[in-house]
Image (cartoon, rainbow, N blue to C red; front, side, top):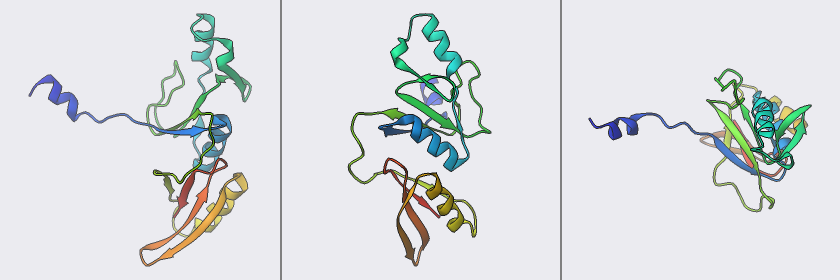
Length: 158
């Protein structure tokens, strides 16, 4: 086997990136919705600012610490992360600022599975966090609720 073919067999690290008008508000919503943690990149940001590699205008204060102005991520609390940068190395969602609001249906969405008998309570909890119910689906293949996050991105609760 060549070195190249061995590399092709290695799993590819990935994250889901969500375009957002307000990435920090989206990160707060999804961290609460998924019981994830908002990544703390403040140590990295402070190093970049001190070294002149990042202009102050590229940062904001978020929950009492410096954060990137245009992107922020949430990660699974049990997954590994880089202690120097705060960046998650496992399951994560990254929210990046874009100038335009969402205008069409998602081509990709998250399905949340809170567990047997917990859908109604989860829909209520997510609604209290700022989500909205778009429709309830009852088909021979199953039942679920289609919801939208605060910026209108669709997701389902099974």
